[in-house]
Length: 139
Image (cartoon, rainbow, N blue to C red):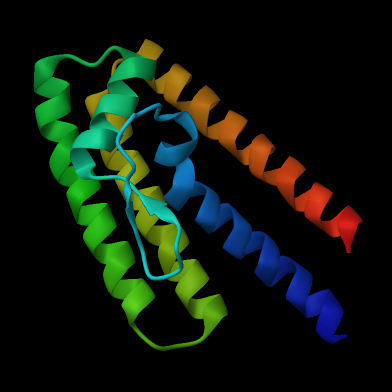
C-alpha cells in the first residue's frame, strides 16, 4: 500500500522539480549558475528571462513585466523549500506557485508566444518523464 501511495507523490514531486528546473534545461549560459541547498542549479531571474526571450522572442516591455513574476516565484519556492512540513503538502503548494506564475506569464504573452510557451513546458515534462523512466529501469 505504501508503494501505491508513494508513486503519485513522487510523480507530483517530479513535475514540480521539472518546473523549478525548467530554465536550466533550456538556458545555455557560459557562467555556472548558483546552486541551491540540494546542489541543483538555480538561475537568476535575468537568466530565466533571457532563456524565455531566446525561445519566445520577448519584447522589452514583456521582459520587464515577466522578471518580477519570476522573482516572486523564486522567492516563494525558496521560502517553501526552507520551511518544514509534509512533502505532499509542499508539492501541492509548489504546484500552485508554478501554476500561478504560469498564468501571470501567459497573460503577458501573445497568442503565438503562449502556444510556444506551452510547447516548451510540454517538452520539459516529456524529458523529465523519460529521465524518471530511465532511473526506474536502473533500480
